[in-house]
Image 1 (cartoon, rainbow, N blue to C red):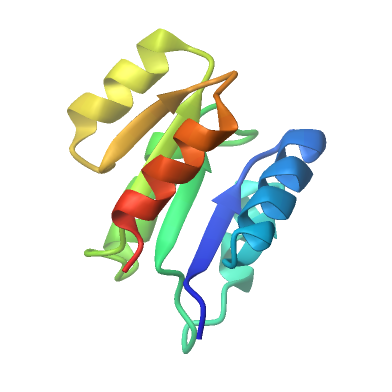
Image 2 (cartoon, rainbow, N blue to C red; image 1 turned 120 degrees about the horizontal axis):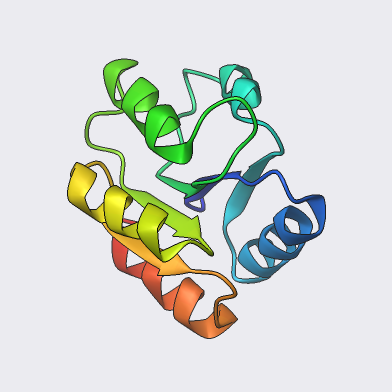
Length: 119
């Protein structure tokens, strides 16, 4: 089965672009446009990686990552995305994410980042 990636991004155009790019590269993608939709992930088919925007409605991507870690995704790799250098610095310092990537990002660099962390 292809690796499964959960993408949490509230900008629908960016979410769709990421979904299309990752699916074209052979990944299964769970596209979530709001952090509260994380509850829709099937627990018996967990993602192999989370790609999380840091500026989300209702909570930050850092708060979402903390929630995911406490919900049992202790070893699942997480990559943070943001246009804010301050937020990516906070994410890096949090110890929750394997990598951070700045928006706007180079798609090939993002894909390489994903491939480094997917089994």
